[in-house]
Image 1 (cartoon, rainbow, N blue to C red):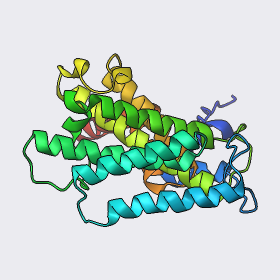
Image 2: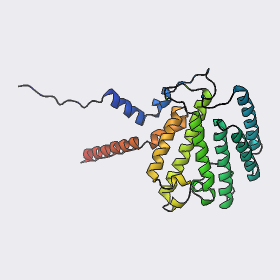
Image 3: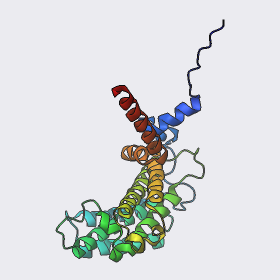
Image 4: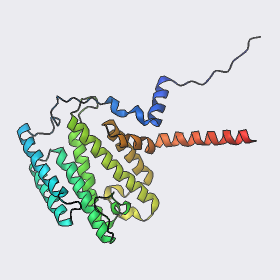
Length: 263
């Protein structure tokens, strides 16, 4: 009599790769990125000569130094720096770095306004408060932050995912995607915490659910990690909806197994 041995369930190589990527942040999506130090700082869509680029970097550094001159810059200094970035960008609309630095400066202003509104004594250099993102008084500023981060990403992203990138490109894309992912995650948490946030915050986010915002954050964290940000790699795994779903299934299976062994 022929005995039949039940076949063991097996994973295809593709299934194994997917599960590895879902649960292991060290499977680093940045492995697919080629950084070529011989490339120009920015792709061909950025129409700035190397001579002009040197001048832009100098002007940009001067604005940043003004912000860093004091441990906690006041609102007047931040607004003045924003005006300088506005002028810089109006004269060089394809310079990606100016957009991400203006977004950071807008973050400082949001903190200052929110801290003043809530009469807190926290430094504006601390993490952006969850409530600030959805405060009616800072909605327009937050919209500008998202716009600037989006423009920086658009200008710096290579035409094809297979294209090599410069060190400057990789660094900016890692920072911009991670920054935007962080703000989207904050927005998702505010949505979950209070049901009355639909009429506040950046207009483009108001109609989205907390889950949708978190999925968008996860995508940004994926790209932030892909371009080399280690924190983004970890957050990409934690916020990945498929990883969370699989994790919940595994936890439930383990719970049932434990309960079964106790009977």
